[in-house]
Length: 387
Image 1 (cartoon, helix red, strand yellow):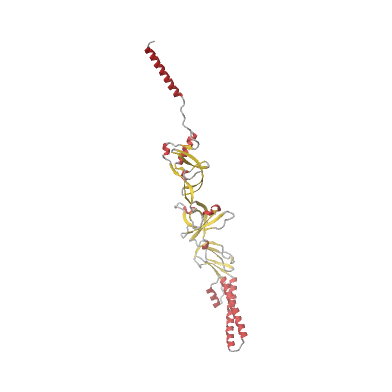
Image 2 (cartoon, rainbow, N blue to C red):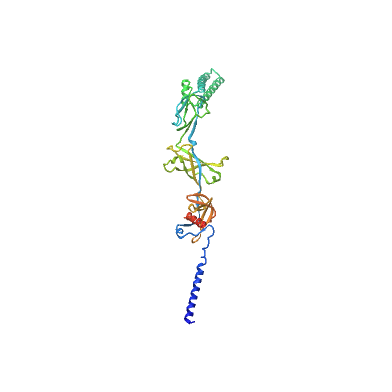
């Protein structure tokens, strides 16, 4: 065979070997990318650009307690008014909801007891006047040496007793509601008047009326309740576990749902003026109270209200609420593991205030977590795990 033919066959054989080798390489399976551990995600560049990472830090945290409450009367501005004597109501001057002034007559009644006591006073006054004249005459007779010292002392003693009885009768009339001016008029004229008036002791609104025309009333009964509603209380019950977080003087926000009514915010700012010293054994709560101006009358006793109490700030480990995503009944955050690697970490979180959550477990100070875009990162992790 000629040398040229031999070289041609050798070249053909080499070409077939190369083609066979290439075919063998093409038929080999492609190498798979390494699989990430559960909970770890490496986002695509476009998602990575949407993420914001920040370090977990310790900062002053003020827990906000949200407790249910109600509007109530300022008990220092409420008076319960009754009759001073037993009697029958003859006239009513004030009705429920009326605005009254101090000293205004609310009702009138006829009292046999008052008439009897007035008669006893008139008699005592007359007897005291008689004994006064007798004592003055005895003094003159003693000076003229007509009577002895013993007779003078007897008459002076009788006058002293009569004066004491008159003062006692006068005091009894005061107890029954008669003014000093009216008693002096009775002593001067001797005219009996068995009509007794029921007066309001403060200015305000009649919030209760428990009496009707012709009703017989006793001094122990409450006929009217008058309240000055220009200032009211807001009271709430704080659970005993959180009682240590509240103190007098703390600022509180009060929300009254019925005041909103589409007219803007229903939140009113006040301060705690009272924190109970005891725990209610039935509800296991501590009473707290604030007071509010109410000159426009918008706040009405018995209205429902919520009290938001900011506790004293303490240093706590916190994360932004935007960093937290829910996984079923659990909460988690994404902690940065490397330049483009993030791991889902389950956390236990506490109270929330101003968009920050208290970290109870799962993180430590300095951990870098995704604070913006965590929701999208979580969706990417789920997509990759399901695929």
